[in-house]
Image 1 (cartoon, rainbow, N blue to C red):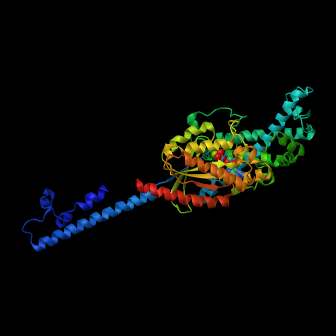
Image 2 (image 1 turned 135 degrees about the vertical axis):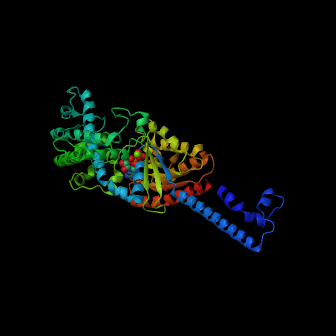
Image 3 (image 1 turned 30 degrees about the vertical axis):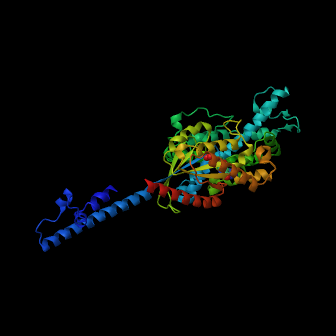
Length: 497
Ligand SMILES: Nc1nc2c(ncn2[C@@H]2O[C@H](COP(=O)(O)OP(=O)(O)O)[C@@H](O)[C@H]2O)c(=O)[nH]1
Ligand SMILES: [Mg+2]
């Protein structure tokens, strides 16, 4: 603006053409008295040249501004409660738009997936021990605190249902599989805090302080940590083998040794019955890989895209991921995606990021209508999502920010309803509506829409998608729509600035 005023509007030619004789500047710039036709031609040629140069400068500035505008990174914040699918959505973005990075990290995901698998096993061992320990106190016949011996005992846990008896084979399995705990520990050490789950029962052994949680957890930091292990020697006698390779070898050996035991444990009817009685739906929990153990516990195993999408690492604080998109409408442009921890303790860290984001994707897992938050067992997960959504919608700082709602985990919702779980039993306002995925998802969507309408400081468009972000092809289509919508808004904002 300033450039065009000084360089083109105030040229001498302007004043010659539209001269104001009283104006001192006009007089100063007026042609000298007694100018000959030749002198006048020279002067006008000079003026024309200077006008052209000034127009060129204007064009250059306009082009530069346009390039700047194109270069400005798109900033996108992923919000939602813990385990709503934020990190999985981020993975889908990388898979669709930044395939090179995705492929480069594939071998590192193997550590996460194997870690998830081993955790599945040790979780079952813990469940067995917990099941054994509690009735042992009632039983009176055994005061042993050693889990291995109490597993042999005969226990009744619920008033209804016949008692469960752990047999010798269970005790043997438990003893044989216990070295996996050591591998789990080593993997926890290698992956860092992102590998330590926090829930009602198991707190991490040390609490990270507020500063260290920012940008220090999540897959990016876990992978940075793994990469440093690549170059560290295992022992002085084996300087050529990096610690990561050493760990990989330990894992491969362990998986080869324990494969049959893991399969036996997971397929054991008594174990399954015990899990059902303890209402541990381990197959529905994040990062469940026991059904794939024969495929994963192989030297030649390479994680598939689906494995990576289904794997689980915890995110705490806020983690920035930068990708230059290699595909899509915004090819060549940098996107900055902010993946946040969703647990109550992490939410305060979100606020500073509200100031400068182009858009927010809010993930609401609608399958969770019958579940409680892991960090607070009194709070229903759907209620928590409604509450969080309302808070985001009414936030003044986000008044002009595009918010896109992903009604996520539709696949789990469908499976749950087909299993016979009734929405009505958990959401009284649902009434006698049909208990199917189409009706239920529309019902939840309507509620989110109303909350946005009633709580936004100024009217805004309700963008929503039904998603199952572990399904990459469907999600890729959704992300293409989302990309366009965010880009349109981003350009509009850039023009306003
Ligand atoms: N079946 C299913 N699993 C999902 C879906 N979205 C996320 N998950 C799984 O739920 C777990 C938690 O997801 P994650 O992205 O880590 O949640 P975050 O805590 O919000 O980052 C992961 O194991 C995901 O694979 C979904 O739509 N369907
Ligand atoms: Mg996460």
